[in-house]
Length: 220
Image 1: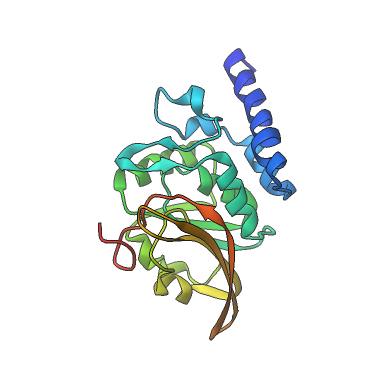
Image 2: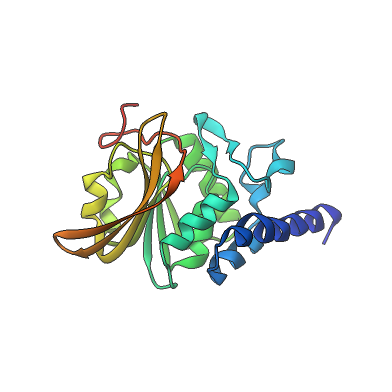
């Protein structure tokens, strides 16, 4: 292991210990995935030194890579055990999709910006994340071709949960998404589908995400 790789490994350990475990994330599989994945591979060139800082970072198309704690918290909130099919809306850098790929059997991730989808797909392929498929489309409409999903996670905030996503959530499945104002107060929600006609709603924390744009989100 060269000196750069050793330094990044040291910073990954510190990130998990100080930013994630210290704030209450306990899922051992989530913690292990984030210890192993090279987050520096997912940031913009020139930002590698900031890859393990406790804050979001800018990526292309005016989007961001979420802070490590938020990625860990949302991944844990999905309550994955390893056999699930997962849908992610908002691929961005591909980092959260890579984490999900370590936690679930199959991941479909949808990104509306082709430049982000192509970049994420290249990094995921290089890292051997063969169970993660990247699609370029309007994420507010989900990805019906692979539905139903045991878990759905949305990495941008909408005015409400898109009906298309709820329709693609399996009975017993969990959907985690920020909902609220476009530029103001937002809450991270978890919806659990109890049966075909009923969902249980939980408010997990106040958050701040970029807006979810599309046919069933905010205007682009």
